[in-house]
Image 1 (spheres, one colour):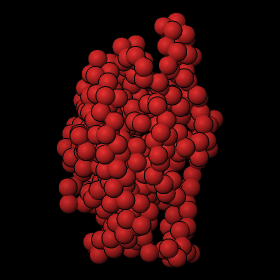
Image 2: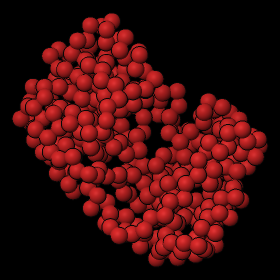
Image 3: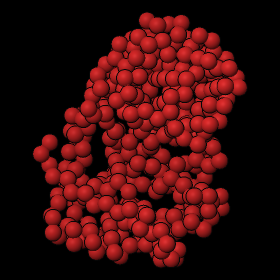
Image 4: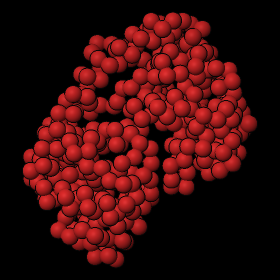
Length: 360
């Protein structure tokens, strides 16, 4: 759109081999990043600073450098790091909100929620506690971007100022285009890991007959999934592994429905937005932001998370009602056109930048 975007990127791999105490101090307050960003602003003179991640290498000290130089600060909240040391609001395969709203997120330390380590989690907890006390989150950021209304509510519960949080979803570009959906199969696309609900989908398919399923993705459960399919004789389930984005779009344009059985608080699942762009309805878990993005009976169906029986029932209904399913696909495409195009997202982003610039 004619704007100049100047990246500032750090790699946490630089901390490999660094003294752990020094790395911990860096995560709480990096003087190096503070000075580098201050110099960066003076040399390049940008209009706004848009942060995506400051942990570990950059640290919240970067916000202070921006404010010292009169620079508006925008922060996209891609995960729940500011209210959860583990960043996912998940522990031992289940949703967990024990640290939300606590001045000191000690349950996360107790359970070692970051990298399975109490010591490493204590670094995150120290960073969160100190900057909460310093009012960094409330005073040094002009505007936060949450990806969904659900996430916005969670961050407000966690103590971020409601008036500073706006919702801007992710978007799909380029537009893959509406598919014909003439393939007689359901589709799963995602990481093959426990929180994605892949075990639930396999148990559901044990209860189904005559509904082919194509599984796209890779991850720690792939071998388990392939063994389960062989052991249970699930000939209708095909594990395709990782596939290029173009092929995933082609599959989405052919499939009759996307199955999204996630069992954790997703941020904004790009897979659902991509399915909508292809005119593919979604059968998804009734959980967190997913239940906000997929509208029951209009752009797809919702089932109880972790319930193979309920998922199987929804798939059976979809296969028995092709006309209604096709209409949901058309509605999904309309939803994409109204909310998830690059053009719509650009308008929202420019309004957010203007808001940040005027907040001072």
